[in-house]
Amino acid sequence: MRYISTRGLAQPQSFESMLLSGLAPDGGLFLPEVWPQFGKPEIARLATGRYVDAAFAILPSFVGDAFARDEIRADIESAYAAFDSAEVASLVRLRENLFLLELFHGPTLAFKDIALQVQGRLLARALERRGSFSTIVAATSGDTGSAAIAALGDLPRVNLFVLHPKGHVSEIQRRQMTTTACNNVYNIALEGTFDDAQNIVKSLFSDREFVARVHLAAANSINFFRIAAQCVYYFTAAARFGSPPVFVVPTGNFGDVFAGEAAMRMGLGIERLVIATNANDILCRALEDGLYAAGPPRHTLSPSMDIQVASNFERAYFEASGRDPASTRATMSDFETRRRFHLPADVLANLRARYLALRCSDEETLETMDLIYRETGRFIDPHTAVGVAVALARGNSRERPMIVLSTAHPAKFPDAVYRATGIVPPLPRRVADLYEKAERASTLPADVSTVRTFIEQRLANS
Ligand SMILES: *Cc1c(COP(=O)(O)O)cnc(C)c1O
Image (cartoon, rainbow, N blue to C red; front, side, top):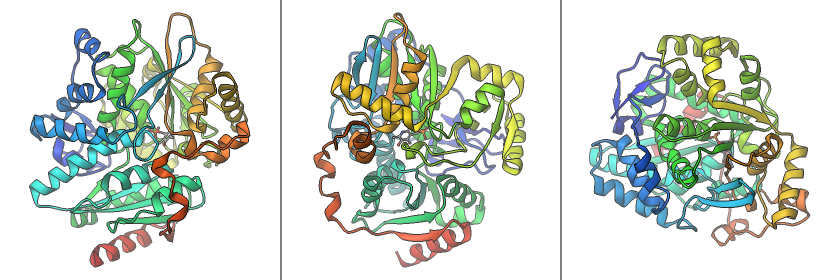
């Protein structure tokens, strides 16, 4: 399998170089040259097997011959052995035809573990084989950072720099990152927003000399491997139903919901992908009136979704344009200068056929957390609540199962859970000692050259 850029000016890459990089050299995002295809009987078999078997049925078609099949198998098995639930993605019934797909049973209690635990293992293999090293820079709105640290901390040949917006992640999210004992991890508390952090990462990737010198790679969902690993749970969940379900996806950077589009393109029947957003509703506005315009980011109770510019929307645009790199390139460079663009009518119509975007306020988020607690005795985290609120507002039909992706464990957001229900959710054992460990982070201004210098100095000393 080879990987092409959405902007069409970069050479197709092998799986391994895609894995070891981030943005394509032309500033675009990588996608597989062709989508692997799965037939109905193959998909039906995924309903009954183990999650690791489903992952092993799907991921090798993206990896191709970059790794031996038994290497891929071993990495999948060991990645998911560390999860609290052997199901990895457990389906829980909330109401008639309304389900949660719990994706937070990994080491850091959010769905990002599902891809990053496998990605870290494959990355280590690739570096070992090449005798090479890698510098990974991750921008985080809260959960990617800890998942990247759990997956890449203490890996030989890897240094990891994590940029989080200072003061705008939950205390548990911050402590999960800053209390790491790994010497190859550097936490940067950035004086800015997540969008600033993501822009800095993108600027670093556009500095070709720097990229080549430090072997820069991405752990964010700009790395296609994240999408590949995440499409697996769409398959295992949908395969359990007799008719194509609606998925409701709490959305920030558009990676998780795009994994749903990937699954559809690979042959999975999905009725509709519902993009659930908080007050950062750029995607709702884009699908309503065709104008994709970045506004000022707002801080909400669901911080991991406090994102204005959704990187992966470029992938959806490229697909909706019939894979037209010239159109994608023109539109994205327009956006880079003017912070807005109009979706061409055919692209908009194509997106609307697959996606629906709905928003939810902080007040509705709290009401939904309380409602679900009273109805089921279950705590849900504020991101999941955005999805559930949107699902309830849309109304679930008798025929169509509706599946809300539950993206984080409620204990990661105790303040919001307490505000909603009056109860502090218990901390799971794996993070019980977070408040006892010392924190380490460097505060830096939201300035790319300061961040670049910081990285260079730390690498020189490592
Ligand atoms: C990252 C994250 C999201 C958003 O996922 P995207 O792939 O960025 O759209 C939603 N909820 C939680 C808890 C997250 O950590």
